[in-house]
Image 1 (spheres, rainbow, N blue to C red):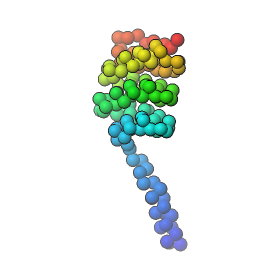
Image 2: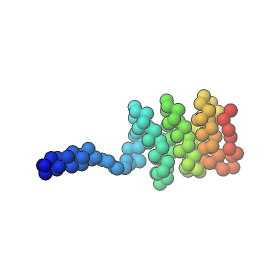
Image 3: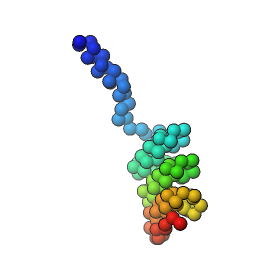
Image 4: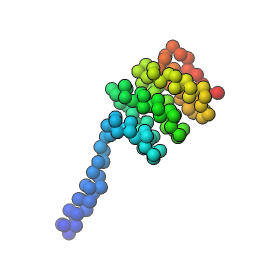
Length: 127
């Protein structure tokens, strides 16, 4: 019985190797290019919490605005807005997403992000 208990505990430990391991900013940025939508969404929603790495993250989120998945694009716009003035370089991409996006959610998120990046700009709503 004792050997069986140790075996079960060992299996549980091996199954959880890496559990709770937090990915680095570089790993999350790489995940933005992952073929799995789930990985891209996790990355795009986690990166905005890493304000200290804004110089790396903002360009990656700008690229994510071009993702094939609408949820990733919406999350990228929201994430860019969370960086405020640190994301000024995203203004042209967000303006394009706001004006030319087919998805109202993306247009709305881009408009809100623009108002957060440039507080002098009034919030705009999707048409």
